[in-house]
Length: 111
Image 1 (cartoon, rainbow, N blue to C red):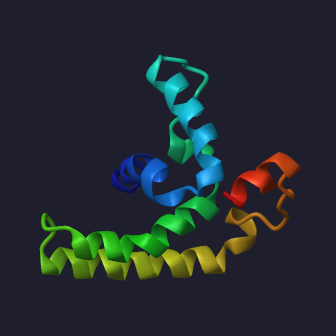
Image 2: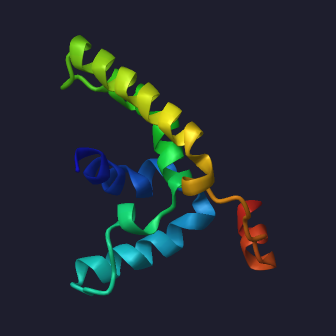
Image 3: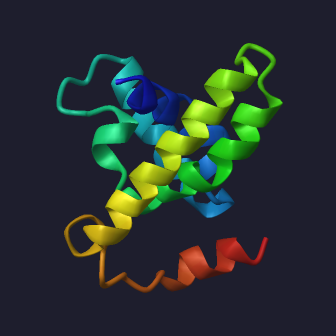
């Protein structure tokens, strides 16, 4: 549950591309306003976003002054285990097909 809470916290600021942020803001507003049909970010976003967190996590942990060296090492070790698990089960957790962005989204990427 700690990783899920951390994911929810860092998704808007650290894990999304600029063109993905407006959707996230709308979802956050619905969640904040008590829309019970809306779920937490960790329940809505796919494993690919979790992989983005995994790529950034060592840097975020290293920069943290609240985590001791022993805990940092343990987090990085467990992250390695988790990534090996995802690699072994990638057919289950990682999308094999992606949709192409519509022209409007493609224009926003160029900004």
